[in-house]
Image (cartoon, rainbow, N blue to C red; front, side):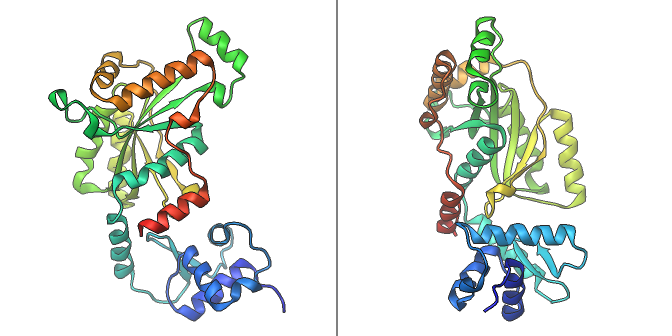
Length: 305
């Protein structure tokens, strides 16, 4: 029997099911129907291969039969075949609502490390000193870029450290499930306040309104205040992206960092860890948030549905 390509498999399944399907749904159906045995190659994550090949087909081939449906999980369908867009959008929003902001932390850790070699640390607000707890002070996640763990040779970093110029960068991240007009200013200025101490500040969300007028306002605020925006893809973490980059702030706010260390043990531990790693020119990655593999993230995501 002649083997099918992944694109042929995807088209066959959509023809039969008569509805938009996510890559994970496609592969589950392929297993149920025995089509997985007819695919020429498998690999460890065939659903990702399906997703990637459909994306390439849509991007590069004007005659591609596929269209992307705006949803979570991301779905694809065939050109000309009708579907209930409003129903899919509502189902998508309902799935995202089931996540908490902290459910998104592993996806941010994966993106920060794979994209920038930044190690992250979750800051638990509830562990802060209640007597001096301040609104819009505590970031959700902090991060550190240490060049000897990424681009620089240890010898070069040690010289920069000796002359008082180690290229260390601090990051602050504010996580939200959804980002739209209703709470844009509140969320944005929360991120501005919570990241004032760091070199880079970001808002991070899994669902970001793609309305042009909203994107214009989001871009305007990002440029005005230097806060970047990251969109997490919790179906395929490799497709997460920085929509608007943060502006580099060369002046660390040591007073705020001291206040955070005084109030929150997680931030204090983070600063101790950074100091030790810089001093020893060695990153003890186990002391930061774990960076899961792509397979672990997908399993984690499926458990949360």
